[in-house]
Amino acid sequence: EEDKTPPPPGNGGSTDSYVWTQTLAEVQVVVPVAPGTRSRQVDVSIRAGHLRVGLKGQAPLVDGPLHKRVRIDDCFWTLEDSREVSIQLQKDNQMEWWKCVIQGDPEIDTTKVQPENSKLDDLDADTRQTVEKMMFDQRQKAMGKPTSDEMQKQEILKKFMDQHPEMDFSQAKFS
Image (cartoon, one colour):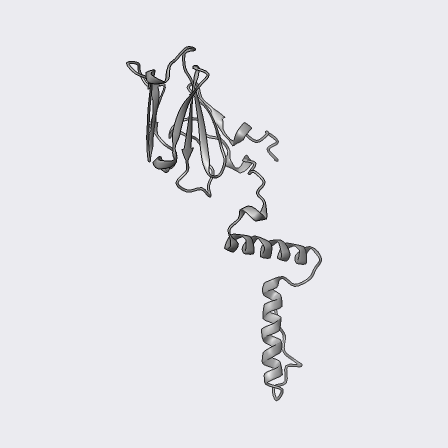
């Protein structure tokens, strides 16, 4: 039976303590704090595999091991409108979706995540070449024509046959 539930908003989720969203490259965590909070009252600790967020002198609002590792040099936090702490976490592996932020917190179904559209121009040369080849092969298959790999095999076989006219390929079966 097909699951018709919508994708999670912002490809993230929420807990009693925070709301989070993500792209392939980063996770944003928003932790509400008491209105009128000043930045010097905020206590945030971001480590490669751990996150703690709270107010000085109080029990942490968020404290636990991260679902996956982050690049701590590229992570930061800000206090927004004196009422929420916004944390930007740069994923160490920028090619995977997170199920949750803190291990043990409610998980999302990552198969429902909606990746942001990317432009071919945004890709590095090798990735772009691979994507363009995949797109070409997909179009070829849809039209019932050979893919680039199949075309390359046919070309190699043709060259071999041309170089060896003495061999009889009339009864040969190729798959």
